[in-house]
Image (cartoon, rainbow, N blue to C red):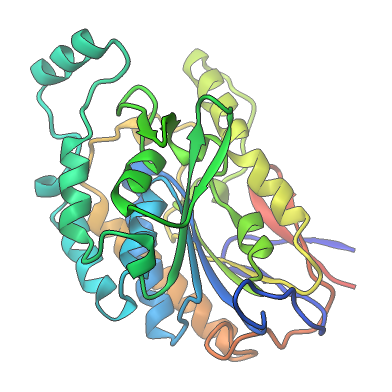
Length: 331
């Protein structure tokens, strides 16, 4: 039967062999999947802290948009990543890639007619935050996704220069310029795969920790105000793939949807204030506390990722709940 679940719960799989991981035996391969969400990506820092403190280490990191930046920093050295992430996010005003004045934004838009900000500040931030420059130098396997304009499809980056790949994955339409890589142009990965759970399964993960910014914790409701129409339409476009992939998760896969402790109301216009950094510290702490509590509770029944595969019983899978959260299938 189907049972509704919320973030802070898990979908667990039946006993059995997992898929063969690329370059490994596939046994207990742990993936961290970091979704997009702009300034709300601060919550992922709290989740990373909670996971690392509970001894959960990733074999694979996948990221979209701001999750790509957070994920790349994590994959560049888990032992020092938390310190670097906290330095980045707690000094976000000094590191803000969108700090341009209104005059500079107007000038950029008048010149380009496509975006308000250049990506030079973001490039500087990436270079400052990463101790390596290529995927091959990362001690933990990492991939990020961007939307390829010419092909109208997802492009996954897993080799070569890191900076251009991250700029492509974080190129928010209208705010930042499309990024040219190999003669083709790319926009924000959230357009094609906002929380890439399916990619983690394809790459052989048997335990998947989903780090999300809080939007999927709230079900959508029909719009009642003119501006809500666009927000709801955008959220459906953003979420539907995640909901479908959660519903299709294999019977042997365990998925942990970590809670933010601070849900985002999809109809709250303040979430669109992409330069508002006032809640960064609070969101990091809220996500840390909520995720720590979840992991501590889950650890009383089964080791989740620290030793590999899950020990819980039941057939696994996940289905969307009201277009927002996952649901576990148990038999």
